[in-house]
Structures are given as structure tokens and as C-alpha cells.
Image (cartoon, rainbow, N blue to C red):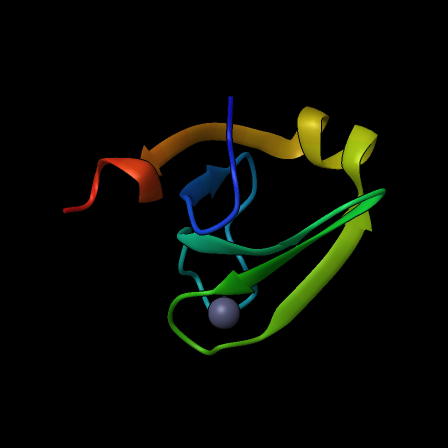
Amino acid sequence: MYELGDVVEMKKPHACQTNRFEIVRMGMDIKIKCINCQHIVMMPRREFDKKMKKILKKKSEEK
Ligand SMILES: [Zn+2]
């Protein structure tokens, strides 16, 4: 399961061709920030669950 601060890969890359997003807010809606251009995308959690491909880096595993 993903959590705040994780870096994820989406099924579709961002318009800038980067496919690394950091989860910057979690609630009913989820906000993800493109690691490359800092653009923030907000979407309902259900939509995020469908569009997220995999977790690239767990925040909780950083020491
Ligand atoms: Zn971008």
C-alpha cells in the first residue's frame, strides 16, 4: 500500500515525459507531484488506484 511521501510510477507518464511522482497529499483526494517539473496533479483516490502502476520508492524505507 502506498503512503504519503512515496514515489510512484503511473500507467501514463506526465506531459514532460517523466514517470516519477511523489505523493504529497492523501485524503479523499490524492495529490501527486511530478519529480521533474514539480507540476501537481490532484485526483480522487479511486482514480489514483486505477492509474498508479507501481511504487518505486517507499518513504518509510528511507533511513
Ligand atoms: Zn512533469
